[in-house]
Length: 331
Image 1: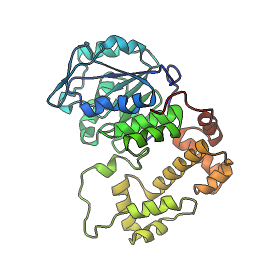
Image 2: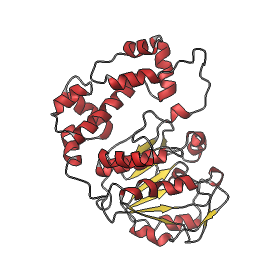
Image 3: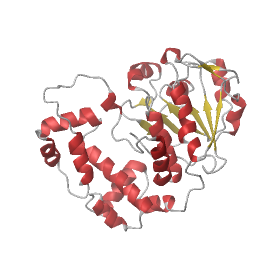
């Protein structure tokens, strides 16, 4: 995934914080209900609207009646554009969609799931910015929107006030990321458990892209990844991981990238930063102790990697997420 610090929403994401889901024609029901299940389940006020206040045709064999028209977009703190039938995607906005988007207040946080990024891009909101969408649509997206810095290899991109995600279930990853950014890991993990989904998925879209992978040995690097997670405090070399997997270092590195979407070194840093974030949120351990427990040689190394990954230092991160209990109900 790709993440940077989430910009402060229009107001604190506590009770009364309003999320509006704008349902386009051909919307996927799964993605349409996702924000309500994840964010609504955590206490956010989630409303659904259409561009004209009328029923919305889904990509399934039914139509949904939404209770609101585009006027509710004016009161939104976050607007989410869910996935819709890619056959309906276009390089230009319809007049009704353009009119609806014009109602959104400046500074409102914008999010898209899968093909929802096509709407943001058609509106010019992604020009010059990093973004993602479903890997199968990457070529079309690049042709239509060459000014967008598309990365089809990640599950989601957090670019502050605009966040985009890849296909289907990556919308869950994005909603949990927003919940984690707004209120910390404890609430995000609680919601994930109750939805029976992982609170955090490693790797990116690359692990889901259909491509020929030599099946000769049938070996996987998953066992080595699990072993690494159980031994993060140790210095871990490529040779160690390859040895656990029973592969040569060259074969292991190639297969690891095929499965996880990144190099072993990048993955290890990501896991160590994630573990450090959890310890900063849930314990009072000194930063240098946390650095040692997650496998960084020094506190300075932890600071460097955390700043590169999420744009803040460990002390500032702890201050943010240990400020007190969330004002939201867990469910």
